[in-house]
Length: 322
Ligand code: AVI
Image (cartoon, rainbow, N blue to C red; front, side):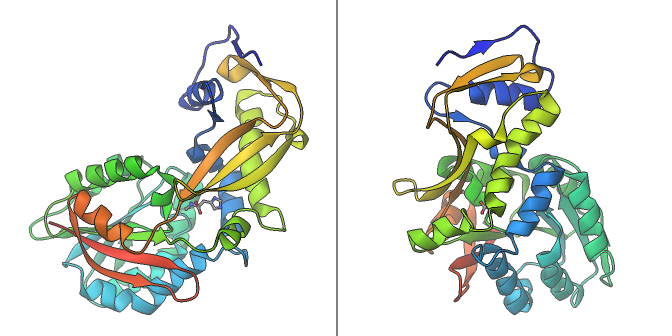
């Protein structure tokens, strides 16, 4: 079906990304980072509580059970920089373990001011931990943290929750190389990676019966309506989670339930969608236990240790910069 740009010029990064993503030949897409406006971030917090989505509980359990050992294996003293802290709940275990050994500066790096505020509220009371939030893109924020180090101070980067899985594999390597290039030998990275499990379990985690993940996914269209004056009719789209066997990832899509046209004036765009056509909104890659160890050596780190949850296959990987 025809896709035709209208006259109104694109006005923001969001508008431009929506325009580019929705006019792609082949598969249309909206970048997954746009799932996380205020509503989307609240829905994601709800996803983390779902019985079918074991990822966050596994991530938290490993930190709770092994934080002292993790900290014992990190070069110290260290500043802590967290890429995408969210509400910061699970970070408490690491910060408390660190506070038993050193005064700690904790720098959550977040796009969302609401998440930064929640994180400061959640973690602000821990003795010997000082919080300084950065509302910046990850790499820019990390550079700002590194610039603050003095003398023999190290930097420990936290990248939890398998957010790395939302990057395609080559893009993940690229991103980790960029993180490495900002760091110095002796700095560390604690990386959370969700491991492969049965397809049925994985699909249920991204298509829960209560429909919370569906609401999270559909909200991106509601966001385009709110921010770019579009007229997506959400009832005419269905949430879909797919397992992509070749790339070993769950994909979230929004499937058009009929032939329809949508106007997106804020992006200077009108699109036509066919019945069954989808907009791809997110990928969540799943890993073998060996994969993060190999990723470490490909990207300039050495995997110092790995902890795997017994209930929900998930790995925390402690990497040290070579
Ligand atoms: C943030 N990220 C690691 C989540 C994931 O599992 O890929 C986002 C999410 N999407 C749907 N459910 C959760």
